[in-house]
Image (tube, rainbow, N blue to C red):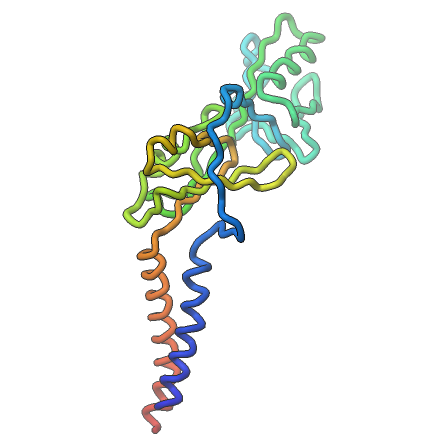
Length: 239
């Protein structure tokens, strides 16, 4: 019996030490800094097309050129950054903004059509909201950016266990490096001076408070204790 309780105690101590830590995402060795509000030019950001994006292409004067079934699920940009279209065949569009891609199609189609007019829109532009919100998951973007408050509102607002003064935003820079910044939504002055703009593929993580971590740890420990108790029951009965 004494050995049984010692085993449970050791398991609980070992398990609780890693459960609380592993429950919180995006932990770093150094504190995450708040970044200053961007200059006005940042608002003029335009998404650049990437391999594996899906594009909706509209040919205004020649709607029959791009059949509806091609646009229904989007025209896939292949791994080399090309799309295939009638008449002009393979066209490289990766690295271009949506407006640049439209103008490129107009130049290429001028060889075959009179006054072609095109718009290109990326269909899979999304941001992702994780953690202590009521509806976590991807959020479709219908323009170039979204504010942090819009994203949290679309995700159903915070849960009761959300930490509101340290919301983390993860963004991937052009060099592929992941950048983290935090925003304090409990202080108006801090909000005014923070970078709260989100761009496609940004990740918002709302951390849980200590009560939520304790509850998760307690639930996990309860499950472990039940397993140990069930495994040890025949031994105790025999004793």
